[in-house]
Length: 375
Image (cartoon, rainbow, N blue to C red; front, side):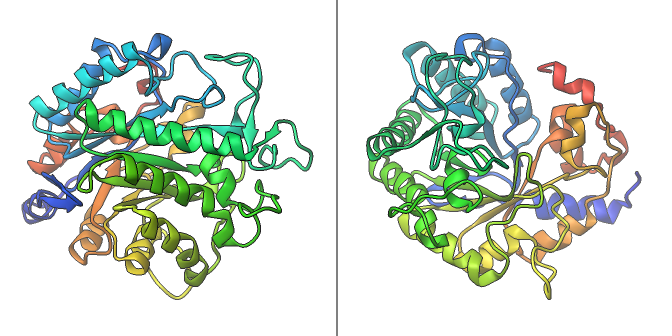
């Protein structure tokens, strides 16, 4: 791919602009998307994880959203190699990561995660813990295979998210991101396909938002007023890529408004291809609609800089470099505020520096072998 020099300078001008989320000024508009890496034995991020994030910050990524980290609830995860955001050793490791990113000139937030019904009993790190969810249903199933959460369960998980956020601020992170996307626990409440509850947490879209809003409110209460709270959500789910929370902007507003009111400072709208319009009659993508409906800063994501969507990466497919002129047009029009980059940054730690310097000819195609290393 070759871009003209005017396009290169335009990229630097648009992407280099500092942008604010609550009390945090992010030095530019490039975000590292959260990507599960499974290089943290015992849930502890080590020196290799520290170097992995610090390299990207040093190369010009303005905001790093870490890979998903399990909150302190026994049913939160399914691997002993995914990092946790609880425990003395785990948090000490994360404090070093945050310090290294700051020393490199970047900002960083942990993504706080509970997988819910994606888990199967017997999986680490807590093998005896049951899979839990709003109705005990896995995506695509009509019969419960896990535990429908009681009020006590809900309260425990809400507290786990709030404690993780408080710990994040205490050890020096710049904010937190709540993972409410992709068919994991919070999203299982948002989506009618997995939420069949008949109490206050189920029913219409606003009721299904209650659990997520209570997590946000609890987090907001446990951190300082200027500490950013980001909420990631998606229409699509694991194993249900055509699923949708909302078919119209009005339905989407009904879901997002309670979250904004509870204390979300920015939304991270996850799509598989950022350039696709979300609703008929408008070119706005999901992040664009989110900003229009809530007035909050938004992060777009989805195959940025590449010609193939990310799901192919997990079956060994690569992707060729794709231009970003359309992305720059949308940023310049203030359709959204930030752009999260995933596989392109996984492939090349210097991606941000090359784009900001106009060195587009040095960008490399994505090779799925990158998933196997922590370069």
